[in-house]
Image (tube, rainbow, N blue to C red; front, top):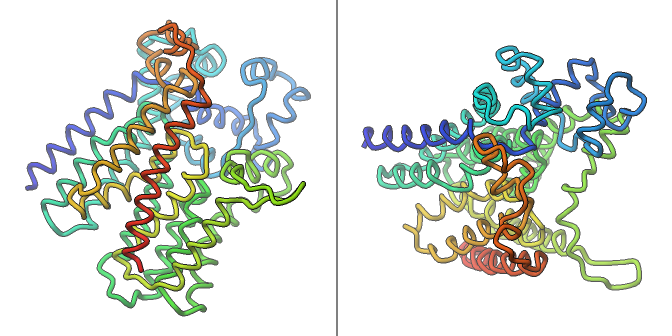
Length: 420
């Protein structure tokens, strides 16, 4: 058993280490760009750097390379990953960092680029492996542990998001898994201490991306004591509030990060009921299920089902980015292990729709990923242009999103019914 675990871990880590240096997406430059801004002394005014670029001397190259760029994530992303980037930047030198940021094409194919891409993704590897370990610890059966570990270590979404694209979604994902782990082995009556620790974990995850706060209400539904519920709510929101408080005076933060367009994507699906009034479908559905969660009590060991339902509701009504599906992945894996792949077809449809949708985003998510080893793929045309095909992007996205929604509704149906 132990030997099999080490083999799966070893092969999975090796694959990640092989993928990391040779794949690139432009979003990974954000970590070095954050370091660049912090080194110039923009700490509390961090988010005002790009809006004020025309009036900042010596930043003409930045303006030329990133003409419409804004930092649109919470501060933890840039200060944590930017800080790690700063440490590793000493190993490659400022000249390379400048070329990587402002003349990327010139460094493609260089061995030093491979090293730098690896160091940028190493922090993500730590959270990825920790997530795998926590998931296995949710189960006592050796067979389920092996199954969980295998499904995580060879999961295409987990590998793509962190080690091909270099996105940091694994960090908040880790904290949602940790929130479940902290409730492990709880009896039907969960202690207040465990509930608060679990809510704190969600709160820390929300300092990187806001979505873990959607899971606070399902966590609150484990207790019927409203005093405990209020404490859970406060503890979960507190880390995010403490972190953003110093940046609230910043106009750049309020306009680009606090109310970023990506945060509001789930509000686009609406039913108009008058000239200027609409029903926001995501909020209406979420409130409906939240109320049902409070009505129907479950044990802590089944909390993952409510996490899954909540996130599925978000994805149903949102034009999501491919790496976001990593948020769902732990709960789909838990479901697969518990049911022995009973719902394999529904899960397969979710993965197929995700894979097909990749080809209807920018080519940087497909062919362009391999530009470090094939520099000609940098800013490449799409695979459809290469094939001489002109698909209707909006129609095809709608088709694959519909396939996803059909499977998502299926999962909501079976697990909401089980919750009842």
